[in-house]
Length: 268
Image (cartoon, rainbow, N blue to C red; front, top):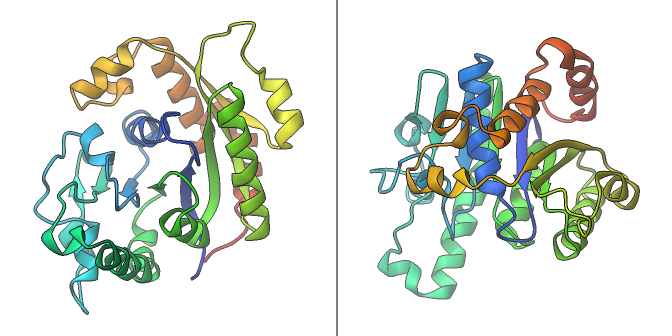
């Protein structure tokens, strides 16, 4: 598999930390606030959820369909959320053939085998492609680590999440995959939480974004609208937009972007 420098894997080995929320909000912020052409892809094939955050429940076609055809058109599975934000969803339906565990694994493998072709076809059309990874270290998550140019690690300021983050960084190192930074999500600023400095010291990776816990997040998910669009003035929305500014290389964050691009040294 060939790494693409403008493909960023948004990953968290531990479920529930806000990985998909982060993917959806970063994608929406980059597209709406910074005029970037963004493609968000749900590579969490077996437990899809990105579409649910973007009001896309039962798409006619999805990334799952690339396993069914020897020749497929990428355009068939891309959906415009807005002018600048496009989505490749994964299906939440469980087909009869996937009720057999071995068959399901075969189908997931077929999808993964097409990642190279999929990304080759679309990488030149977008400023940035975000892959919403599967949690854990199963074949789905590992496959995205092989094709992405860099890793954005989402975690919480608590020990179970940090321990799994350490494992993700070790996996990335073994694959010689650049780690662009850590997004610290659901921060309450309580004394019992692990601090940004402690996390950076333990993981040897910079925390590039701190997203505060926001009660409006649950409501935005219920409405299937990213928080940055649903409540753009909320603290979490502002934090996501600040992170998006870093990733876009806008204004005061140009130095960060230059350094970040050098970090994502793989790809073509």
